[in-house]
Structures are given as structure tokens and as C-alpha cells.
Length: 199
Ligand code: SF4
Ligand code: SF4
Image (cartoon, rainbow, N blue to C red; front, side):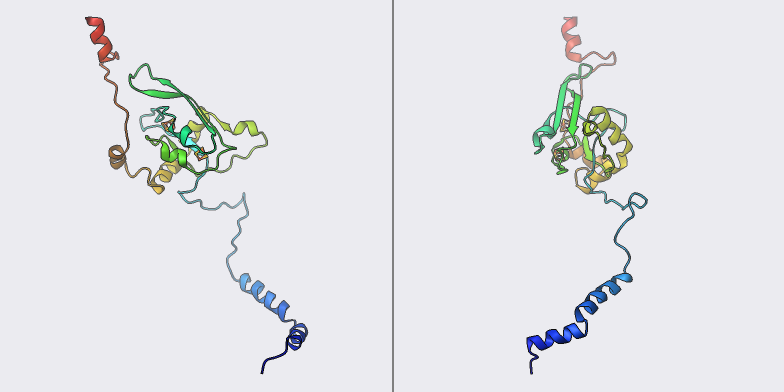
């Protein structure tokens, strides 16, 4: 026999059933580990795949990886990257970025710029503490981007591994496009130039 609706409501009111149901949830969570962190005293462990601040990277010998090809600028959906490049006069056939800006206030942390880079010069890091009252400081220039890359080099490397951008040194050398090495003789002059001046 089914209990009429108004009788059930009356029983629920008398027995404080709704309050009891709510308290059951509260009591259950009293024995769970807290999910919250007391930031900034406590900090979460951020996964390597986390998309934090962008940084520019150097090769192990200190040479800048970025060759100023502009592919990251083209790939960026927020139009927040600006690269100015020119030919490296000491190394024919090679270019480098003279200026590099990322307006991090416009960045949506999609990671497209990192994927577009043919030499893995850009990577994201686990750095997320750069809030500031002065918005103008959030236009990251080349120096700041290289500083971030240096300070968070291990993060950046792990980001590239986590996103399958770089595997290990051997594989990445074979997989990624490398710009032609300059034909420079010991004296530092390009072969082509020397040949023409000798004739
Ligand atoms: S992460 Fe996305 S939005 Fe941010 S700079 Fe790179 S491409 Fe642009
Ligand atoms: S960061 Fe990469 S994609 Fe962007 S200009 Fe430099 S080499 Fe090209």
C-alpha cells in the first residue's frame, strides 16, 4: 500500500528527515582527506603537462634555439606573439630573433605556439605565480622569456616530453628539422665569400 504524498511529507517533517540526510553527507566528509590547499603556505603538485608561463629555451651550449621563423606567431589564435628576426651575419643561412614578445594577458595557454615551433625553442613551464598590479609587466620580452626558460629548464623539458614534442636527445635530433649548418672555415669567414674574394 502506497503512502499518500501529504502523509509522507508530514512524516518527513516530524522526523527531520531532510536535515538528517544533509547531516549524513556532512558526517561522511568529516572522515575524508581535505581537498583544499592553504595557498600560498601549501602548494599543489603540478603535473608536467601543465600549461603555465611560456619560456624560450637554449641548447646545452647556450646558443638560442629560436631561429625567428615566425611560425609560433602565425599559429597563435590570440595574436599575442610578435617576433622580429634578422639574418645571423656570423652564420650564413641562419636567422635569429632580435625581438620576441608575448603578451601573456592575451594568452589562452592553448600550446599551439609550442607545437608549431620546428626547433622546440618554446615550451610551457609549471610557473603560474606572476600576477601583478601592473599589467604592463605582463608583456614578456625576449630577455624575460629566456630567463623563464633558464629558471624552469627542467619543467620546460618535461613539458615537451609530456606533450610528445621531444622524446630524448637522440630521437629529437632525428625527428626535428634543423636549419643547415653554416659553411664556416676556421677563420670564421663563409666559404662562398672567401672563394669570391680570392678570385
Ligand atoms: S599558448 Fe596559445 S594563446 Fe598563448 S601564446 Fe601560445 S599560441 Fe598564443
Ligand atoms: S619560437 Fe620557434 S616558431 Fe617561434 S620564431 Fe622561434 S623558432 Fe620560430
